[in-house]
Image (cartoon, rainbow, N blue to C red; front, side, top):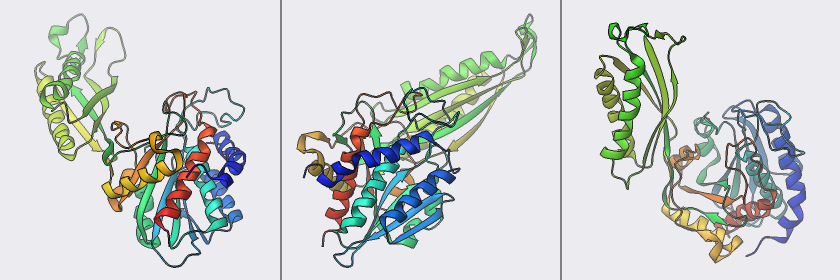
Length: 387
């Protein structure tokens, strides 16, 4: 099945919604205008039910099919932006300083709205579709907040599906895989404590700067010498803070960073060894290291049966050769993982063409991808909920 004719006709309208959202980005749960825009469009389409305030600022819409009773499937789009100053130079660039849709959530929201309009017009399915517009994907665990508010239970959702754009993948192509498709994301803070003093007399001090350098290097041995290379692990120290003057050795240095894993056992191992290695490395210099390790989003784990189904749907839309069903896992993280822990489902990627990478200040969603995304959602609903 190629791109649906009705969807092609909708492209400019949906692109207009997308650009409007792009101009007015909002962060995390502070999505007052975004949620209002979504709810207003859904009301115009004549969906059967619109609920706002799910997970604080999330929106859920229900569309009932005309072909009789059946299950309810969930289809999710994230709505929040990033704390970035946009440099795309596009006419629809962000009007909100320090905020930008640099991950394409404006495109995700617009495509799901397009699918809502189509499905509300045709209703060529049994059961119901739950359209999930989620806040706070970018670090706020909005998916978990919606689940905690009863998303799956209250709407009787039996399966759930998600989609994300992928820069560098040609428009019109899809990719996914069963099992671990995106990584778990954890954070850590290590406070290395020594004894400060004058920089001209380091022998009278316990230098936490030197100790922290040993810690940074030693942490990489966990990856390079203690982890099976076929079991992905990333440990990255991203910030170091210590001292205020060029001639003073400080009392402590604070390191922060992230850990990414694809398997639960690797995650457990990394947490345990990070604490042990940091403490041991600091002690070589006579310093101490206190580690605060915080688990974030879990692994995004695609269920095998639902992934096979989602890939087949993508092939109906894009063609047999335009779908990669065994993509390499991505070490980025995604809070759709919470939804996949709650219900069976699948997450896949949609080509965004030759654009800057996600989270880059000049990134912009490619509107040419819109018909493929809408057609995927519509075909998924009509196939899964066929009478």
